[in-house]
Image (cartoon, rainbow, N blue to C red):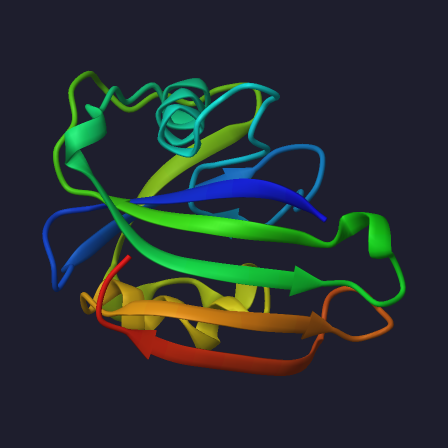
Length: 160
C-alpha cells in the first residue's frame, strides 16, 4: 500500500463552495476530485499536499494553512497494486490564481451542487461530512469493477 494526499480548497468551514478539478488523464480520468497524488520518496505529507496543489491548479498555500480532516484506506481487491491510504486536507487560504493544467481543469461548485455523479463513488459517503467541518477516518473497499463501492466504514474523530 502506498500513501497519497488529497486537498480540498474551500471558502471556509462549513464550506459554501469547493474547488474541484476534472482529471484529464491517468488514474481517475474523467472524474472530479480534490487535488493530490502520491507522496514522493523523502517527502513529507504536507509538502506533498502543497506541491500537488500548485502543480494541479496553480494555487500556493502555506503549511500552516493546511488542516488535516481525514485519513482513508482505499482497498481494490481486484487490483491490490492500487491499494493506498489517503491523507485528506482542507485549505481555506491561498495565493495565486487558479489555472488549468495538463492534469486538471479546476472549477468551483456550491457545496449543494457538488457533482457526485461524476466523482469517485465513495466520495458521497464522506466528503459531505468533511465539507461541514468534520474530521474522519475510514476504509473504502471497491467492488470487482474497481469503480463501485463494496463497503465503507467511516468514523468521526475529534483531531489528528
